[in-house]
Length: 555
Ligand code: NOJ
Ligand code: CA
Image: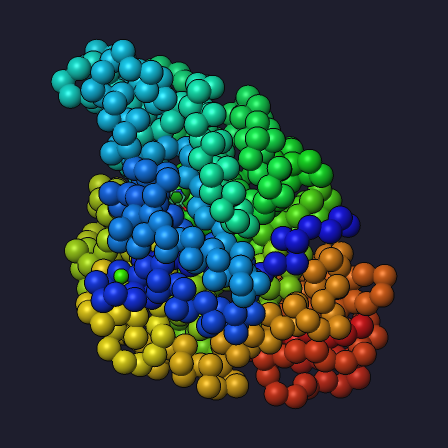
């Protein structure tokens, strides 16, 4: 197994708007992150991925960039960013920025020039098409709902936007545009970044087709993914991007992309486009593949386990993976995977053990280390997220009552994980001196970092143990490089696997259930490395796993 610095990393995702507000305007900022670097250092993580902090009108909270070269004043200054990179590096931590190059903001000067002057070279930086009989060129639905085409004034011209209408898609067929993007990527990498998390990168190649396609929703529109996800020819763009930017910098790159099995080698193989990709299969197991998350999908532990294990086995054959439970597009993992009556220390630490010791670079989303949970907003007006408003609208359109639709927002809104970080039990959870941009979860008085750091039996302390185990224990090699081997799949509620090297092996057993489960262990157990319960109950090789018990054994 080739050494790469990013295989040994532990990554922590920061949602800058909600991490820490240093200047009392209710919005998290770069100085705030700098002030909290020691918190992250103490936790033991060594790579920090920041969601976008570039200049942006914030239609999609920074994923609509109007200037790639400058920091949005909400977050601070360009100097603050340099300082953050410097201060993080000083502490042995690298920064990943978010690279959003499938689209820009409609307030980016390229797009403004494209609209102003039909002869400008910038027209071809975007995707403009003629309408048909007064309608858009086709009936593609954007990811955020509604037509993926926006009419330009009263003309018969439309531009494509896979996400919101304030996020026009870039035309990657244009070589000049691609060169401009690579130059920008190198500008940031030259500052000493560790690399990038790469947004919506599987969407950059489009197969344009006119016409009306069979609808798959109540809105008469059709899922756009069929024409803009991993389209043939994308490999040329991705190879060029890698060769001209990431490769010469030895960067860590994490692609946000659901990659079909057949393409995985090209993405993360020996000379793949990226270091690793996020697999959506087990984090999106409760939503339909069209992304209409207001329509819940039932799942079982067995199905979830199959998805995780399949992803591990396929990735292991080919290259390296990223393992995660949460991010800013997902609700909190505790609420997704655990029935509400079972949420607590045991279930939170069981989830942590289950995913953190899988093969790949682990990602922790801010607040996950505290077991932060979903936040119920009192009305739709308290939700900020553009996708939440769209899903609510579509839920109502599909016949759900207001109450039913709200239930789905509580369950799945992206704002569930975007609420301010809970630092302590003072006003606004110690996040800000003023009312924050998004509601603080009311449970901050009993769930916050200060309290958990002081308590050796907290979820935070347990995360720290897992992190230490990976960073510096005698099992480090097995945890980072060991082969992944599934086991005990005959038990419905057990998620168990081994990590094996020539020198050492560990066995991880998680009881994903509120009921006891007896497991006959076939291996010779040398000892126990970590557990979320006191003691161990076993008779001979018959081990009884208590509700949500996790044990890591040395073999
Ligand atoms: C994926 C990002 O994670 C999400 O937050 C964003 O809305 C879309 N890409 C569009 O950039
Ligand atoms: Ca601020």
